[in-house]
Length: 493
Image (tube, rainbow, N blue to C red; front, side, top):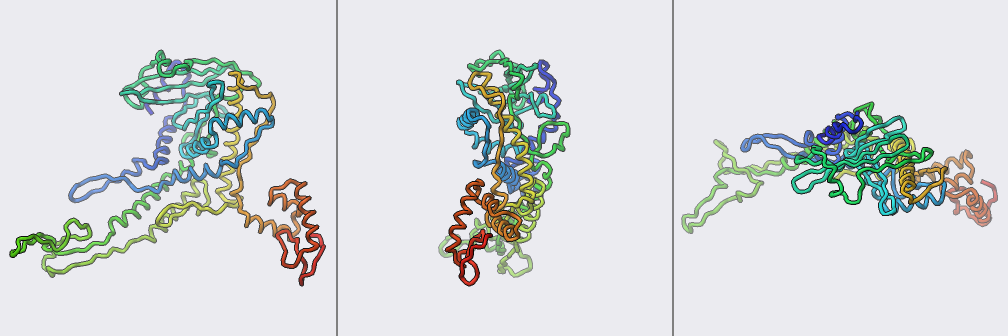
């Protein structure tokens, strides 16, 4: 927050109207994603011997789990990005390959869902276009409209010796001219902007210009970066262009989940078997004949507890068994996980706890499920972001003479929807539709096997040829088998 306040006070740049509360929330979401948020996971307790103490609450780590799961549902290696112009497609494919785009994009999509957003910024180096991936807390928007964010500042803090340096990269527009300006600041305190030492910028970033002025073709004008965010309305700051985490509105549920999981863990710590023995039995006894010391019980064994019985039988040993509430805890955690699933955009039952580990549902989801609807909603804004990213890459490539794309091209993104329905469910549904006569055989083959219309027609022709020898036992999914009593039939399905 000190950095952000410092950036906002730089008078030589336009005012930053972003709300400080947004970045406080982003820091909270980041802490939860990493697995430790002090306000939630720092537990205070009191003991007779040591008084007030603190410990770290056990966490189920659900913010990381839901972010990772949604990222894998939305984008994977089966996602296809198509460009109408072949040369442009080959260039973009090479840029993505050089920057290991698929792996990095998958990781940063996870950060996006967990931290509220992320930015991809293309730049030119060594006659190549390279990509920088930036998490939500390292980017501040400067200007935006209904089309998205088009000006911003990127924050990079690093340490050398005992001093903290902050590199700011400003992306602004003056008409059709893109201005990229770098400033450098130093402070002795982490999180503070400190003193402007841009004059020493070359010392830290050799070969990088302090300012670059890039006139852009107005017909091809695109943003210099692409901002991605979850497709969820921002109810932290309704005027902000920034996104929110997919678990932003389930903090109380996360607290309840981790409280229940911590209690489940403590159930075993505090409920272990104990044996109460008279205090005199754990004392050292000296054998008068040999002079050796003896002890009835090992004083270092935590199973045994010494106790003064008073008027009770001095030689009584008691075995204390504590009933563990395992099933009750598991049931409570699963109930909370169902609630959290709904709040984070997943169907109930997507996550479960069996007492040993947290599991993610492996079965596929139907097209009417909340998980699938959330996936499709996020894909809408991510597709727009990818189109914006490709436009930015091509703009940088043309500005630096690396590659020039045609004036007219189209970018389409085909996401992997194979998780929507498994083959067993689909074949059952198609079989029912075929028997009811509401779908042509050709269309069913095309849909199920992913064939073209011509291939499906050829397939049906082969089926019809084989039907002459089909027996009653060779009935297949598409009804191309023999008739009753083992006789052949040529009746068209």
